[in-house]
Amino acid sequence: MASCIFCEIVAGRAPSWKVLETADAYAFLDINPVNPYHTLVIPRQHYVNVMDVAPAAWQGVMQAVKKVVDLYTEKLGMEHAQIVHSAGAAGQQDVFHLHAHVVPRHAGDGQNIKWKTHPEMRSQYDQMIARLQ
Ligand code: 5GP
Ligand code: ZN
Image (cartoon, rainbow, N blue to C red):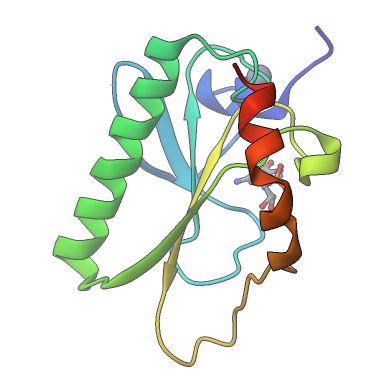
């Protein structure tokens, strides 16, 4: 595998602003934050994203996400947040070491993630569900 910046960070060979760590995961501040305390949570082991991650490693990341949320709730009074995981280039993933974004949100912060919705797709739901059988 070519050098991975998040592997370098979790190994301590590249600098980072550590928030917390667990046996399975490492949480640090995003270098290009959208809001104060915008945090990335990564598994210690290299996985690309949710597609290839071992279920136990994913669980370890989610447990660390919860720790970060609880920490910010307790220490910062955080009341709103978004947890985002992007998988694959077309899924808007830019760094190909699995990570979850924890973005604290507050009213009037000027941020907005909004998807285009397609309610007309509901007409295809029966066929869509059938395809999964
Ligand atoms: P993605 O678009 O893959 O979901 O998010 C990648 C995130 O990693 C971006 O928000 C970007 O700012 C952050 N990032 C990229 N390189 C570094 C780095 O070297 N250090 C830190 N702390 N964050 C990084
Ligand atoms: Zn990596």
